[in-house]
Image: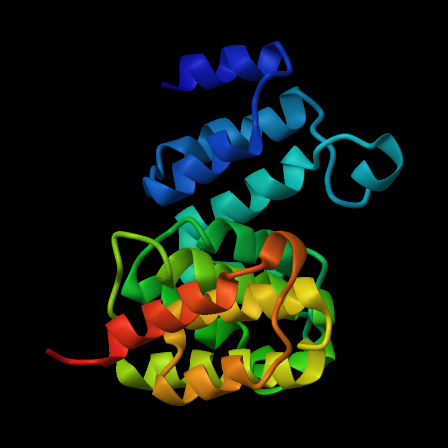
Length: 219
């Protein structure tokens, strides 16, 4: 497996998805390879990539290694600083977690981003990333049921996000889609309270309302 990844790296064909797959598979054997590859192939980190216009594979690899070594605790240092400020690498953390579909991921994500969940206005871009992560983890088959406490916390976050940023079409659509996984029946009225989405988002409301009803109405 690592021979294939090494060939890809040598030919500049290695993609972010290749690295994330290692995290999804919890392949701890990949740790030495990733550490060596960062040095051997001189991958850019997120800072260098701003001027080189290259994919910051070093940062992706670092986040994946942190997860493989320390789980969610290992990711803390890449989410926020000692002063509590969210770091640029927090978006990489969310991107990796978005592909690791489990109840443990949901709990870990809530712990890592607890301040943002309470106060989405702290960082719009990161809040939108979190909305997207919720959607990816909880709105698509195979559907995953999570603890009601966790669902309520994430549902409240999406509602707060909507109240802050719901006037803009793409943000509203992203939040609506996430409500398929964490919305309750009251969320249907929230969706209905906004102007109809138009253009490429037209019709999303009906899909969302149908999904919310299906997940919250018992036979």
